Length: 238
Image (cartoon, rainbow, N blue to C red; front, side, top):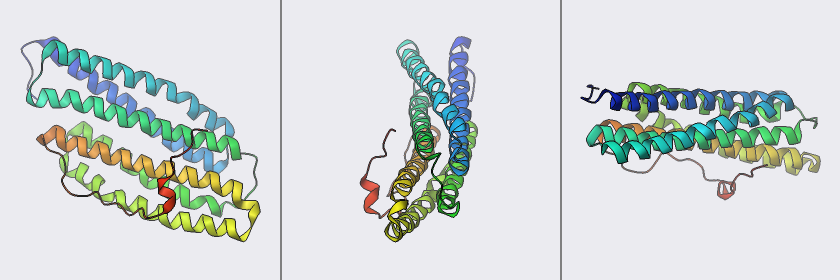
């Protein structure tokens, strides 16, 4: 992107990019560690994920405030305006991803002392692996303004939804087979829904990248495959 006559304007835009990059790194780490904590039922690691969310919230507020100030002061046009608006959008999605990772961590704390077979957790882990890959790829695409890579992330979101539907049915079967599984499986269902929502936010970021690069947003329906009734339930906060 060409430089501006006012060098401080370039510096302000670069600071926004750096803050988004920091947020992305924190969000990636939170999602990975929340999943690791779930697989190992590690309450200590889960608490670290919960604590990390404060920095993500702070960065999101700073980006929003600086972006609004930049628009008021510089009155940017075209690509500069889109970059500033995109920073607000992406920071909001990253903040929500952090919240969803925190929600998973809170569930881990609640079930850390429950003994169940490891196989029952593998479905959530697989979903999370896909969501983590989408998050990494979309952040790379944002950094390089790669519309093609962003489109690829956008098209892959249906894979997570399909896994969620399969996992939903599997966990219901576990609960029907043995009522002692109900509490643990209910927590896992909420974890899986949080992961599915993380995938949705990576798709939001992919759409923002297209807007940033072209001034347009994708047309048509997203590649959703989530047909479960449970999808209408909002994940709990604790």
